[in-house]
Image: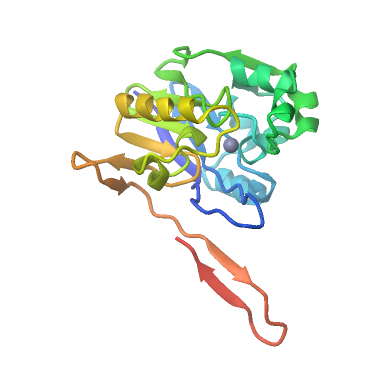
Length: 241
Ligand SMILES: [Zn+2]
C-alpha cells in the first residue's frame, strides 16, 4: 500500500504587479499509518484549508507531520495551526533562516517573527533521506538554498514546491525567482526531469510531461476573482483558470 495524494489547495500560476499573491499548493499524503501535510498555504488560504480538511472528515489533530518545502510565507505561515506535529525543513533552509542570511540576500518572503517562533522546533532533513517509508527528500536548491521536494517512490510523483513553480516556466527553461542561485535552480530542473515526468508544482496544477514533451494537466481547478470596482453595479467575476 502506498500513499493517497490529495491536493487540498491547487497552486495557481499567477503573478501580479501589486506583489506576490502566494497561491501555493498544499498536499495531503495519507498512508502507511501517517497523515502528512506538504506545505500549508498562506493566511488567506486558511479558511479553505480548514474547510477542505473537514470535508475529508479530518481535523488538525489528525495530521501527524508537516513537511515545509521552504520558509516562504505562502508555504509555511499556517504552521501556527499545527502546534504538536513534527515540522521538517531542509538543513540548508534552517541555516538560511537561523543565520538571517535571507535578510542579506534581500529575500522579502521569510517572516522573521515566525523564524523566531519555530527555529528550535524545526527538524532538519537532508537530501536522500527517507522521511517515512516510501517518501524521499529531494534537495532542489535555487529558489532558496534549502528548497526541497518530496518524492513518492511507489507512486512515482515528485512534489517540487517552488523548485518548479509552474509548468510554463519549467517547459521553457525559465528558472523560478531566485534568492539563492539561478544556476542551481536550472540544475534542479535537470534533477526533476531525471527523476520523473510526474510533477506537482508549487504554484500550478499536477501535471505529467508526456513522451512528446507536452504537459498533461492531471487536475482541474478554478479560481474566481470577485472585483467590486463599481459602487453602482454588482461587481465583476473574473475566472482565471
Ligand atoms: Zn517561495
